[in-house]
Image (tube, rainbow, N blue to C red):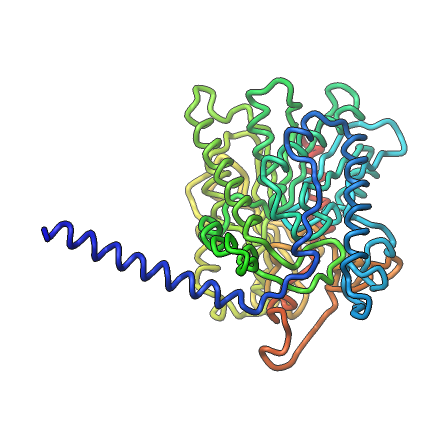
Length: 483
C-alpha cells in the first residue's frame, strides 16, 4: 500500500475513534437528563414569512391562541399526583404566570399619557421574555414615548419552543415591532431600539438592514445592554453536540441543560438549537459589518450606539463588543460604558488574569472614534464609584465622582444583572414586595456541600440585579437629550 494511502487510512481511523469517543462522552453527559412535557411539547408559533405578513393585532391573536394551547397541553400531561410549588407550568404553583401580578411573557404596548414624542422598541434576550426590559418600558413611557415590547418566537412558553425557532423568526418579530412602534408615533419622531443580550444583536442586524431597505424605519439611536456580539466557541459547534438526538433513544442530546423551571419569565433549560441560532445571528451581524465596511460609504450612516456592559461576562465576549462592533463604527457619537469589577475589595490578585488584562486593553491608547467610560470604585478600601470617561479621539480622560457605591461582598456585575434595579421584584437584592412573582431570586443565599443541588451552585452566586441601574438611566437620558 502506498505511503500516502496508508497515512490517509490512519488519519481516518484516528478521526473515527475520536468521533466515537466524543459521541460516547456526549451520551454519558446527557444520561441523567429527564425530559418533562415542557421539553417535548413544541408550540405552534408563527415563523418569519407569516410574521412579515402579519399586523400587530394578528400577532397578538396568534400569541393568545399559542398560550391557550400551551396551558391545555400542560394541564393534560402534568401528573395529577406530582404538584410542585415552584414549577411554572403547574397552575397550583407559586410561580405559575397566570397567578402573578402580571404575566410578562406576552408582547405588549405601553403608551404615554400624552401624545407620543417618539417610539421605543424593546428586544429581550435568549431564553428570556419581555420581563427583562420592563423597567426601561416604564421609564420611557413616563418620559412620553410609546414603547413596544415583542415576545420573540420560541420564548415565554416552554423551553421546547426554542428547538423550532430560527434567528430569522426573531428578525421578523423585530421588524413587526418597529412597524407597530412607528405607527403609534408622529412622523419623523425619534425611534430608539433597546436590545438586551441576543436582542442587542437583533437591534444591530435590523439597523444594518435598514441602511439598504427604505421600507425599514431607521433608528435614531441604538441602546445595547450586554449585547450578544460575540459568543463562546462552543456555540459554533453546538450542532455537533445535538447529533445523537437524530436517534430517538438519545432525544436528550437536543439539550445542553435540562433543569427545573422555577423562573416564571425565563427558561432554565437550554436546547442545542438556541446556541446554534445565537451563533448564526452573531455571525450574520459580523459578516454584515465587515461587508458594509468595505462599501464606499462604509458604516457612516449608522446611528450612534451606546452600550452598557459588565467587564466580567460569562455569556458574551466583552472584548468582541469592542473589536467586532465599536472598532468598526464611524465617529458618530457612540459610547461604550463598562462596569468594572469591585476593586474596592482589594482582591485583584484573586481575579482571573484575563479580567485585569481586558480592562487595560479596553481603555488603553490609541484614541478611538467613540467614547469610553469605566464605572469603577475609587480604589482598594473605597467603594464609592468614579466614572472615568475618555472622549472620542482623546487619549486622556476625566473623572466624575458618582453618588453610588459598590455593595460590599459583590465581586462584579454579570451578564444577566444589568437591566434589573436592586428593587426588582424577581431579581433584586432588595425586592419590591408590592409585586408578586412567586419567588425572589435575587435574595437567595445558599450554602452547603458541593453536589447537593441539581443546579450548579454558581448559578445562585451570579449577580442578578444592577445596583447602578438608576445611574445608568440618568446617563442614558443625558446622552439621548444631548443628541
